[in-house]
Length: 163
Image (cartoon, rainbow, N blue to C red):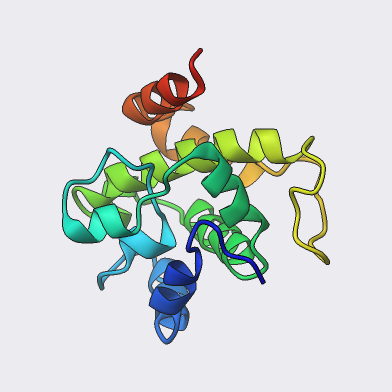
């Protein structure tokens, strides 16, 4: 399988910790260190070496992440777990500054998913195309951020697209 964006780095990082990630999210509180490779952000937002290593370089890479047979379903699953948490703020769930990273991630993938739905060949074989690929990410933005995407992520995406 061709991997022009090096998405295997995410699969490798999630190996052995994904069950714990899900358990932490189901319990309503991130406890360990996995934010970068479970809820990645757009390149240009994080300054640490780890943040740069796991940064998503473009909208095209974000679309490939969503279409990946392992990463796309895992991102949707984790986002769904966060969306089902009741009675806690996003900062209480993730802590500072990870709640900001979550907002950036949701903004990026909501935008990427909006363009995936109509893209020919954007889905991996066997991936069921839903009516609204962006729904879980928009739901998270609505629930935790009053529907407001991350301004810097949106600015970087706009700059990259030349619009």
